[in-house]
Amino acid sequence: MPVKVSVIVPVYNPGRYIEDCVGSLLRQSLPDDEYEVIFVDDGSTDDTPARLDALAAEHSHVHVFHQENSGWSGKPRNVGIDAAKGEYVMFVDNDDYLGDQALERMYEYGVANAADVVVGKMAGKNRGVPVELFRRNHPRATVANAPLIDSLTPHKMLRKAFLDRTNLRFPEGRRRLEDHVFVTEAYLRAENVSVLSDYVCYYHVRRDDASNAGFQRFDPAGYFGNLREALDVVERYTEPGPLRDRLYRRWLRNEMVERLRGKRLLTAPEDFRKDLFQEIHKVVVERFGPEVAAGLPATQRYVAKLAEQGRYGHTLAFAEWEAAIGVKSVPERVEWQDGALRIVFSAQLALHGEPMTFPAGAEAPGAEPPESVRDAIDWLGAEAVTRFGKSSLDLVFKERSSAAPHFQPVRVDHETVPAGDGRVRLVLRSTAVVDPATAAGDTPLTAGLWDAVARLRLAGWTKEVRLGPAPKGERSLPPAGVAAGHVVLPYWTEPHRNLSLDVDKAAKRLGLARIAKDQVTVVDGRLSAPLPLYVPAATEVAVRLTSPASPTPVEVPGTLAPRPSGGGSLLTAALSTGLLADGVWRAAFVPVPGASARHGLPIELRSRSGRVELVRAAGPGLAGRVARKVRGLFGAGR
Image (tube, rainbow, N blue to C red; front, side):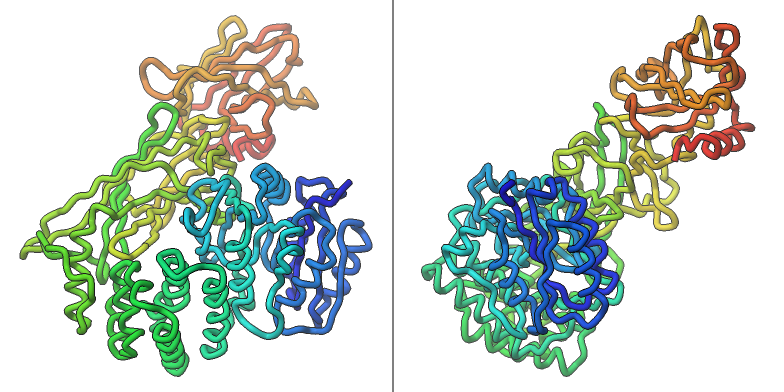
């Protein structure tokens, strides 16, 4: 078979951190003969070379190249490109890993859209990744119609013929930002770039010891010297004007202004931050005209002005003020509605932990920030009030084990709340609709724990916070619901009382052990039991019966339907007596017939001489004992 994808992995002393990478590459859904993995060992001095050689000996689609240490990742990646046989090449770092279907999905998406570059959705584990770029799929993206420039790491899939035709390779040697130079040129020269956002393809991992190469302290002079090379690429392939200014703005914002703000600046050593500021000052003066900073939000525009004017003391003072800004979020209502969770919540900025206030009825300030920090803070307050209508409050759900983010549809209301003394609070209130069938990027939620995150964008600040805590004295939540083939339980975390979703993992918290024993019946072989579960309409489920008298469980079809009164739902199932051997059988609820997920019920049945009768439905006094026994014996309700 032709090789569809060549995965190129530069390797240098990863130790145990390479194992997740290796595992993900071997688990890919593409058949082994349709992709290859090329490890380029850049002079590792640990036991990695032997580990890779053994891996290649065991797997014919794994290849290893060894070379003397080159100092950085550029040369190993170029060696991999030259050796690659695939139609596309994919770059992966040795301490990161891929989603199991990443290569197959990215390849098919690239072919379908004739893409030279395919950018797959990313998730960051203890590190930041682009967010806005992956709100939706972009089959035909450019630097003009999508925030492509936000993602300049090399972890993308590129057509090999495109790389060879353009002779595009990574800068080599001991240097920084070689990926910025490479990826920027790829974006600007590609005939098409496609962004795949409905599946998490790439997981960026920050090591426990924070020893990833990209997290090491750098020499500011060398760093910003390398950054100028990325700006040179923009200059080479664009004309002067709004597009070039917009692209330049990415480096001004991300690599300069954001390094001079709040805690990020204040926590750096004094000598480093002084050198950092001076190098940023040089680049801003040399390379950026006023139009570049003019497109920034007000807060970033003020910091850019301080950098341009070389006012280091003012920059520190403003950073100290900004470091005290946070966000408060309040979950106000959570309820099931038409098969989806409806979540109403609010958020506002806070200063030193208290709600931030702004001047009431402020008029639009001038475009140019004032000189003093005190005046600039007042200027920013007026800017926030006049632009309040453009602010946003999103709800993002993140799967806890992977940190993969997924935006939910929201409706946002803007409320100006009087705060006394001629000032107001700027409160955003959003109503989100979380459909378990589509909440994970237009795909169903998967089994696991999902944390709700409020994402507030206001006046140049972007703040994320877990949605919570639950209001004091008000901790009510709707019951678990059965939707999209899963049992979804909203719950408050302990001890912080933040909102999360438990998908198919809950056991005792579902409340199944508290089924009222006088409401469970078996009449003419038909089981009927009320369950404290929400279901929007009658749906096919199953009941799994397990008995010491039988080596194999018996699963019978059932129906879960809303109860016309009393809340919750009613489970009914026809008990096929011909399938049940004589003996005592215990029941478990199965939300999807034939699936492995099941939840134990405190119901015991006895089959005898072709008849089935109810032995026991545990009341509150027996709930804990029976639930524990069922889970222990049969693994139900994990």
